Image (tube, rainbow, N blue to C red):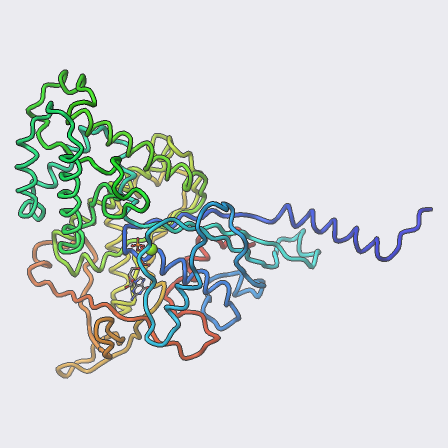
Length: 476
Ligand SMILES: Nc1nc2c(ncn2[C@@H]2O[C@H](COP(=O)(O)OP(=O)(O)OP(=O)(O)O)[C@@H](O)[C@H]2O)c(=O)[nH]1
Ligand SMILES: [Mg+2]
């Protein structure tokens, strides 16, 4: 009989457990999607912070693996792709936790991170092995400006130009865009493609995009790289504009126009932009995700007014159309993702009193209703939630004209003064004229709270519910 030492026995046992662990180790590729300033970076930062600091302080009550005492620890581990920047968690958290805390800076490029989350499985076979399993969570952060390039993938140059023309010729864009529209309409499409002219037109169009976004608070800003060019700054691929006079071009002439002509060159650059910049980006980074969270800031547009809100609604439907998860959807055809869980989140819910959270979710549901209807037949689980990745206010009650009112309290971002206010009623449905006339909603930007207890993770609203929905079933 062969002699087996105690040491070898232990090794053999560990090897067997290793195999089991390898079988049950899982990986989730989470897509965090949202327009610019919707709260992606704050969300990712807080999610990491909750997981790596989870120490039973009771912040993740609705995350079963924590609640059941099976959560062991989470840590950042080397990411999958070495050629992509690492998500700058350290700077983001330093800014949030310093005295006079700051929000993370707007994102200018792509970055990635991988978390290894260790837990004890409760499955009946595995519980006999007093061992741990690991869930690897991969997340990518990128500038929200680039998201609206996705719908362009489905359009020809003519279609995109027409869609943009309609937008430019309407309020609120028209007032500022009319000089540009007239200039473009006077161009001879068959004149020779002059590099300087193209550059100048693209600059003028880019200035308009900045104005639409920063002053009017609009969401449909295309192409996204025009306002956030990264390493493509000054490259000819970003020097094109929508042509605004297709009604006056003969179809054959247009089809046969060569790149020597203005219209031919505009079309060529549009196509190059789509293929080389947009398709490449989505192919490389969004290829295989299996869970998705779509973040939407409904409150800032509600504060800006009817035009801003209507534009958000349009932007969401453009995006959701291209993400269409059904068999025929553009995104499915292009990237064949295998999403089985999709969460919609209304961010920055700490800007309203808790009694309004229900309305905020209902408003979000209305915004995504057409998409949700279509998705219902798929094997896709969906949920909508109102969250605050980093809760900057406290909810309470105050007396006003003899009545008790719900209020929020926080430090204003602009002057760092403490403020107590009732920000108003969030409409449960897409607001009508009556709502806009009264315009009862007040959105004040708050600074993140000063940290009082260094051991506590960042304060949040409902991140535990998000974790449970997106990861709970993988950690049983
Ligand atoms: N009060 C509050 N404000 C938030 C929260 N999350 C984000 N914000 C605010 O929204 C701003 C934008 O948040 P980011 O996380 O940078 O948004 P983003 O989607 O990453 O934006 P881009 O990188 O520009 O695409 C922040 O600077 C904060 O002012 C939150 O949970 N609560
Ligand atoms: Mg960001």
